[in-house]
Amino acid sequence: MRYTTAGESHGRALVTIVSDVPAGVPLGRTDLDVDLERRQRGYGRGGRMAIERDAVTVLSGIRFGRTLGSPVALMIENRDASAWESAMDPFGTGEGIERVTAPRPGHADLSGVQRTGAADVRDILERASARETAARVAAGGVAKALLRAFGVEVRSWVERIGPAATGTLEPAAVPAEAVESSDVRCPDDAVAHAMRAAIDDAREAGESLGGVFAVCAEGLVPGLGSYAEAVTRLDGRLAGAVMSIPAIKGVELGDGFASAQRPGSGVHDEIVRADDGRLRRSTNRAGGLEGGMTTGEPLVVRAAMKPIPTLMRPLHTVDLDSGEVADAARERSDVCAVPAAAVVAEAEVAMVLAAAYQELFGGGCLDDMLRAYEAYRARITW
Ligand code: EPS
Image 1 (tube, rainbow, N blue to C red):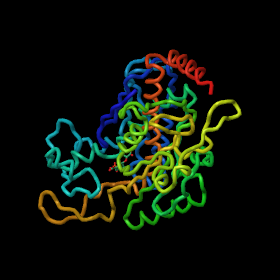
Image 2: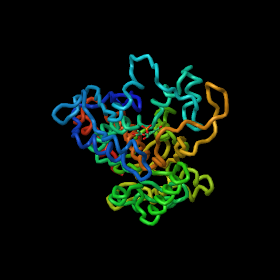
Image 3: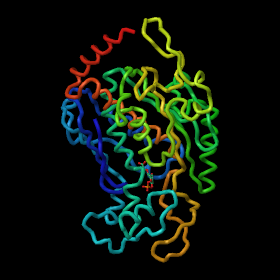
Image 4: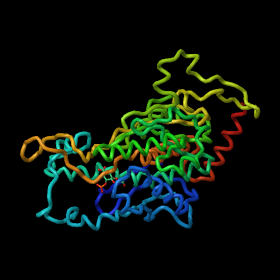
């Protein structure tokens, strides 16, 4: 399974096509829309989210609540597009439309115009906008539906926003309900309060804030991915997928960077026999991944998000028309989008894992995959 997206932030709609979807995967409207709604939430979001009501229109690939085995095409309309019709007109002349000429430090603006030769930074920023991640989340809904058939759930939480942090949390210490009811996706009430205060301070100061979130997948079978080839090792695929999300500047798997400070005995997870006779790990410092494969323990991916580059108190830049020092362009923006990015990362992780299930158990039809899965589980008696 893989996806691609198209769409500009203020164009008519975002679309995604999910290819190589097995037939027979149960998929309801809520499965697709629930995460779009979760991605829109979050303390620190800006004015745009008050306009949008992201919901999927299914264009192909689903019939009577099941996937057909054909590409799944999904569309999310941009409600804000009505205010941008002439500025985004595919066939207009652009006459009378104000150009953006002050590239924002930290955004795709400058490298984008250098790459494409565009005379208007808007040509770049419309697509580089994190609005695109709504389409990723829609695609992730298809991947999550496949994973659910194998008893796998993917969730996320936020551990840091600016200076306010919980420290590293174990999945077992993070109740899903506490996260979902928090507008910063943080299960610790006191820290959540500090996160909101930090966002308020940042807004007041014309600043933006980044943070750290974790994505966790539970119920995974061991052996997904591979130790054999660079491109099939799951670690690299997960890190690449999460780092493809705009503003993500660091990814760690399990204890990640902290592992570098400890001796081996303080890093590796001992193998023990559980009550059901199966082999497990006594700890999960590896974050559910060894040798490029899943261990069957919860998979934990953590990511660092930089602060959003659009600042209401802008940094200096150089105006591309005049060559003079200027204030960076100020688009309406979010103060903090870390909770939203966590939901986007769930989609990315789900897509990688769904593809890994298909590699191991076949990809044509869900029932065949489930039979292969049962045989695999039965073979691993220890
Ligand atoms: C974004 C700017 C803002 C954000 C947007 C990302 O949009 P606008 O330019 O319309 O004010 O709200 O994020 C989304 C629209 C979204 O759906 O997440 C940017 O410049 O990256």
